[in-house]
Length: 346
Image (cartoon, rainbow, N blue to C red; front, side):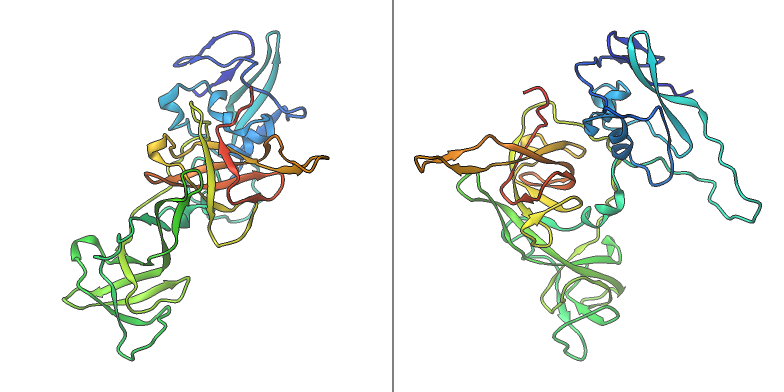
């Protein structure tokens, strides 16, 4: 049996958890639905947005403690979420019943395995879970590299047979191609270099391991050339951590956007100047703030109050930097905009 309740005025006990959330902590939307049937394609973020003003508070709906927040209870297509009015206010719960789905009388082939819905659209970030990577200045110097092809092509593409320097056989046949990329600088620390973003170029599949290995290019997103470096493809999957705000104050900046655009909107991948050493972790939600200036009547530059312009979801964390997906943007977001712990109460 799965049953989770949030109530507005008292601490509520379930079979397993004590619920510490009050009405002062959670704000419902003005027009929430009375019920929602979970369907394939839903996300925790999307469902939360239907009921709550602040989608990152989804874990608090279920009253989970700090450790359990990182691995939320799974919610599946067919589950029914109910918003109920009680004497003590409102409460949100997962119904014990399943929605009945009527099928038309024709042959269907369906998998018997149904996946739980993800926190955010996993397809938006899956390509970035293994690339790009952040390295030290000479982090690729000792990596295996592409020697070239038998016909001495300058540009290598999908389907080409290539030859590489000695590849270790114990790391599998799937390898990724990288080239040293731009420096990631911290505007809050005199442009100190936090690392270098290695540019992802494509994939190869090794057909024969030897002193000079033989491989085939299986994917190409940018031009591939001899001398480009090779890194064993990691088996990285999206851990479905629930979105949640950091427990402490984070004050960082957007230092880069994937793809090189200057204005950033919903669905963009951005780089932040904060990482694991600063306490950021996968699943953290940060608010974006625009810093603006204006000219006063006496022609002085006046710093205007910061304006909140969006929300981002941190999905990959390195020591000094991290990558995040823009979940909401009320207006275009720009490089060097601030990212902070959502400050609803300040």
